[in-house]
Structures are given as structure tokens and as C-alpha cells.
Length: 412
Image 1 (tube, rainbow, N blue to C red):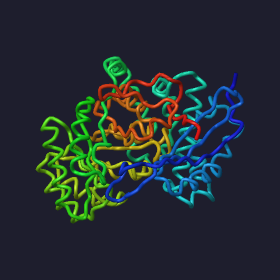
Image 2: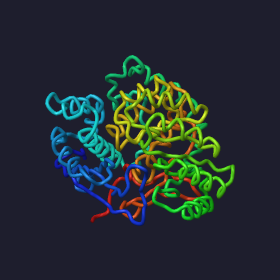
Image 3: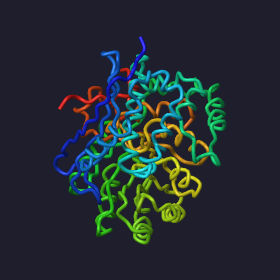
């Protein structure tokens, strides 16, 4: 039976966080939220759910934009739609009146992310497979058809992307063991900004006991001495073998970032994340040169493939934290992931279980594209709200089994 989209619903879902969870140097008291797209199909047993991640305020604007952008989906059969999804997505993103609200950024792009992710979820469910398997089963040409390559042509054409995927096919079996091993995680919930020194040290030890060998600490205090002290305490709590990342969440000016990063070198951070304003590529370039070989990590606020192109060409990023709930969904994420194979960078998506989809995509990254196995972010605060939350055992994400993208939310 054909799966035809007959109805589209847009929801605003927000969840309060307790006791300092989710806090960083810029976002003091966030909610976690999603602009949700639901595609209701002619097959009453099959619906698609897409999400775009927010911090609460304005999620209703994303929901309104979903309604505005999604009208062309009505009546589309999912297999036909996904056979040329790159072109279809471009037609929505480049609407001659609506694109002025972006283009390719902000509320309008978050809505496109949610819509796109819902299409992939419905597609995978209609085939009865999880997203990771859907993507791995596709032929290179079919993957290319999912992607809008516009504005990338001077660095990545569709033909080049096809060649990259095809080149990796003969060695895939060497990397498929990951499906049995699981994908390592790192724990961000260790070091929220509002947590006391004692609590971050206790959390760091607990994370190690649960099998995590890497964790993240929020920095960006008005007094850099606080950041240095807390980073040193976490290092002392877990020893030299653990990987500790520090995340300033865009709090620093360029001069301050250079000064504090120099001081943080003493505790050997695995990376420095979002050291300054996310659109300032030249500032990131200067920081990357100054703190080398410690890499700069960005991604949760990098909104489109064109900005990623510039970050990569400028050598302003060492850890690509591309996020399919911030980019134009899984489709644009694939473009960035393929593009990143051409540069000496680590691809480590932002948001693992909190966005659910990425614990499918890291398996595709490693097996289909040959990206190195690193780890994926773990933030457990929303697990109870998902129908099929990610399974993390001994610090590792297990391969998802249920059809779809794991994005179905429980009712309010």
C-alpha cells in the first residue's frame, strides 16, 4: 500500500528542567523544547514525527513556520517524495517570498529541519526499518538524491559526493562491527554551569563508574578563575586518562577567549567548544591557530551547509558538531558529513539522546563514510518523554531497533 501524506500537524512541546540542569554561561534557565512536525499518512498505522530542538521560548514560532512551509507535502507519496528529496527541499527553502525570513537560518530553517526529519521518519517506518539501516541500504545515487548541493559546488558537487560514497563501499564490512559494539558516548550532564564544585566532581566520578570515559564541563564565567578552578577539580577527580571537553557556549569575546584558553591548556582539554560568537568564522580561525593542537568545536549554532563550508575552508573548526535538528534536517546533515570527509576534522554531532536522531547517524557516518569512531553526546534529561529513548549501556549507544528515527514523543 502506498504511503501518502494526507495531514500535517505542528506541535509546540516544552519541558522544564530542574535544579540547574541545562544551564550554561549564556542560557541561565533554559527549557528544552521541540518544534514538532507530524505527518499523518493514508496508512493509519504509519505516521512520521520530526523535531527541531529549541530552548523553550519561541517554539510556537517554529510550529507556525512548520504550518507555513509544509503545505506542498499534502498528497505526496513518500517513496516518490524521497526519490528526489534534495530538489523538493530546495523548492521549499528557496520559496521566493518565504526565503526572505532566512534564508537558511533562524525560525524558518528550524521549521525546515522538523519537516525534513518527519519525512525521513515516515519513510523509514513505511519500510519497517530504523533510520540507520534505511540509509545504509541506499545506493550512493539514492543518497545523493536526498541532498541539496546548491552553494557547495566549488567544494563538493553531487558527482564528487557520489564518488566518496562509492569509494567506501568495498571496505564497509570492516566497519560494520560497530553495529554489535555500540557507539561510545560522553556525558554532558556532569558539569552544568549552575552546579557546585562538589557536585561536578561527584558527577564526574559517577560518569566514570557508568562507563563513560569522556565528559564535558561548562565554562564561560565572568571570572575566568572559576573556570580554571572547576576544570582542574574535574581533572583531579577523574585522572589523566579521561577526556574532558570545555564549552563556553559563545560567552567570550575573541581577546578573552584567547586568554582563558591559554590558561585552560594546563588541564589538557580534549576540545574547546563554542569559544565565541558562532557566526564569527575569522575569530574561530584565530582561536584555532592559537590553541592548536587542541581543536575548536562548533555546530549547535551553525545553521546551514554554507557556513559549514566556510568554517572548513578557513580551518576554523577541528570538531564538526553538525546537528540535524539545527540544519535543514537529516538531508543537510548528510551534505555536511560528506563534505567533512575532505578535511582533517573530527565529526562528532551535537546532541545525542536529546535529539535521538544522531544515534542513528553516527553509525552511518562510520560505516558508509569512514569517519573515525569517537563518541556522541549524552544528556539524559528528556529520556522519559520519548517513546523509544536511546539505549546506552556501559557508556555506549546501542544500535536502535525500532523503525523510524526514534523521534516519537509520548503524549503530554
